[in-house]
Length: 153
Image (cartoon, rainbow, N blue to C red):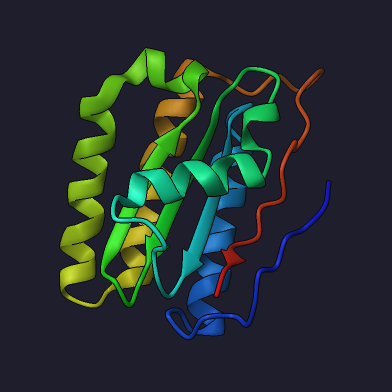
């Protein structure tokens, strides 16, 4: 699986904060067959951040997971835009309200500039639901996508 880097690492998170978020992704994915990615860039090229998240989702080939259970947490920090996009396998089980609730939680942390904690809690909570809906199977599961944060421009 290729790692995508679309520009310089954003200063949105310190190196320590970014590592904590990645560690939270790894811990969440150890309990589920689901895949969680975080994409951070400075500006959103679209009016609707969900449209941009969808573009990134497909660019990162997140729709190629076997159970269609990838989730992307998208952040455009200078434009103050975020989106959470779940592939069809997870979305049909949790519905739109689930994503909206977690977007609200994420935004509450962002309002206080506590970006890392907000990302960690949302990733953790998504991981818990994915653990229930797509439990880890030690005999067949593999890490289908990289766990690193992807930084855009």
